[in-house]
Image (cartoon, rainbow, N blue to C red):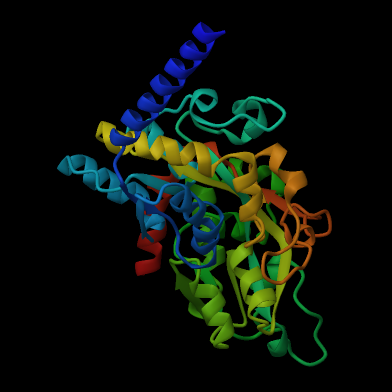
Length: 371
């Protein structure tokens, strides 16, 4: 018995020493890159703050440059100076960064926590792991919000994606994201292309021009946005009648800020968002990042994020844990883009298409904008 106790004590001391040594090997400063606004705030509350409570020696700084992640990581790699530790990106950008060797491949089952019932991380995330470098966080959608008090008298509230083009019935400015993704798809849908043929058409030069020609019809009525917070602010200020943005940003404006705004869910585009780890981090920074990732992407943390914003958690095991809004006490499920009442007509984003065609179509889109 004494020998057993001695061995257990010795083992405990060895483990404790190992943990201490491991902690010493980890950097204490992290720069996390995200999108700002309500989404970044949900990340801060759901897992950055709890992680820092558990690790008081750690300091986290946020950079709101996710919309420029590909270009900036290319430049950092070229300069041999990677200043970011963990970057939140959309799935298609993760695929591009992975293909270019700018993001690190992850063994999801080794790096990430299993579900509470022991299900491996790779099975818990399932098909949402669209790249070896991608750690999914949320399912979200890009959709439209509109000012309820600017709907013309006698007109129905807009409920069809092509109402964006109907400036006669619904006068006023629109806000659209300053990139081709989603805009090109919606344009083709409203030019008569069947939903299941959109990417076949968009893969051709003629189809790309067709989409730009359709966008030409409303170009003079568009205010272009780059940050997810732009459209909610434009709507709040009454500068636009309707505009696209992420469903969580609209939820924040409608439910938390009580703005006279409503959602138009038609042809909402489902997408994924998650982390990539920049390739080439020093060992101490990488060790800290991987420790944080294991914590921040576990079942409870992803469910906790849904307390603050209406995005669906990427883990299957997190879904049953989604409850009420942390501050307002309202049931969050009906505000999710995946709710059956909101998902009657969705458009499925094609990650592979945009990973392959993004640079070429971006160039055409920017040239069209400059005309």
